[in-house]
Image (cartoon, rainbow, N blue to C red; front, side, top):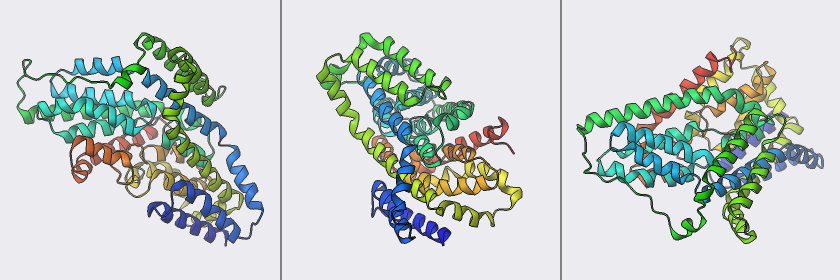
Length: 434
């Protein structure tokens, strides 16, 4: 009975989210609580909910303050000199342009927002692509690869995996750092190859100054927020915050580093109290929306675990998995995770599907952390820029002026290749022991 009820809960949850009959926040709260009451758990349901919420405070805190921190230093213009330098450096040679596009998108995506990455990078580079008559699908592919490979500790998939599996961010992310470096090398290699292909297609012989480089224009409101004199201070502060988080994540929770970093960034860049309030208000909506979803996910995982539904489902599923194949679960999931982005939105996968896979793997002797890492190699990381289930995909095609089908056909193999390369790297480097 618990296994059947758990399966029905997940099916209803996925159906409600994917059909858009409920928002993820509503579905993650209402569906599991209703299932628990139907299962006869009564007032124990409230205990399940509270238990699920208890472990999420550090994760929610990190995500909220990371968004506020990166939003503040971006408002201060920390990325402006870097963006302008890249635009000047790429010149008019297609390989350099595509690689510069990739680097720019990689840097802008440091705040973890795909939408911001695309809104900054594509308008900055599009005029150059148009003036050289370069294929705009290449621009879309370059920014998609850069954003997809950049699964940092404060990005949505990493936060969701940590919350759904109740694992520290550092346990998931730190072993994947060399894997991500290999993925980045693959992405830049593909960017160079795409640029060379464009160079040959265009019969490029040199432009000799005939094409003007694009110039970024800031609105008066953006200009008023810029603090160019604080550029090096903000860079050093960011390095300290991120470096401490990666090297001392076990001793100093990332949430504390972003809290302190945000306070310092606000006091230095915007000493006026009213301006500090406005900067927080400007980015609070995005932070609170994700915080609400994460807390709702705590309700779902708390009920599923506390009621025993998750364990019962896993025990039932074990009968269908040959013991000899158990060790290959992370590898199989790592390869399949990117295409699964076309079927599941991040909330339904990480909060509905991943816990079940992790529980099955755990009972077969495979640590849940490996399952979480496998999912992060593609599920709404490399997969999100081509998934029809994410608004960012439509932002890419809209800004580039291309069709969704053309973007998916052109970019999907590149993103899938990055996911496969990283999965192989996990095996070679021993992240996934076989």
